[in-house]
Length: 250
Image (cartoon, rainbow, N blue to C red; front, side, top):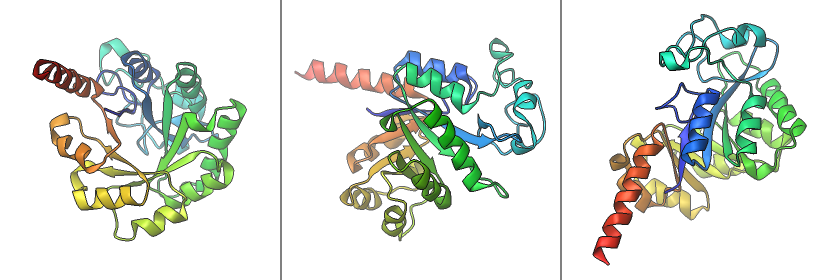
């Protein structure tokens, strides 16, 4: 089974933190999905929400806070006392950890109302080029078509995945426009016909965020290539069960 750890191993550690990345690495995940947006001083930071309110002890929009102000926030205590003092990492810190461990990153480009798309792409590309990250070690994804098109200009050799909740009827036109590698969709809205059409066009198909393997048992049969989940450990259990059953039947 191909599994991506969603925001790190976020069922066992606070999402989008280095602890969550480290747990995904230790668990043996091949891929980790993260979210990136800019601080007030244009540092690519790993955080999902538009504000820091949900996952830190602070308040305010990410883009209104500098790297230093973000660094002072506790991004782990909300998850549990064991993670007190965890901070919001930069993209650079995250890449250094994951690439050195041989784990690949699915970098979602987060675009909220009023964000400067080109600036985010430029700063993300600068980090990747400065660290000399190999193109096959990362994948960009976004709900924002402009972000994918812009990143294509900055780093054309890095693969791109189009995020959708529901796959539109004109998906083939959009995917051709962004020269996409993959489609990332909500497993709850995907049907077999859509999955097979996407595969017929030659794209990889990823589903988010099924946290119970039983919910997507049929999706694998449709041709889905990857599940992006908070709970890779549950998929490992299911995989071991399948191996045992196969051995017993031989």
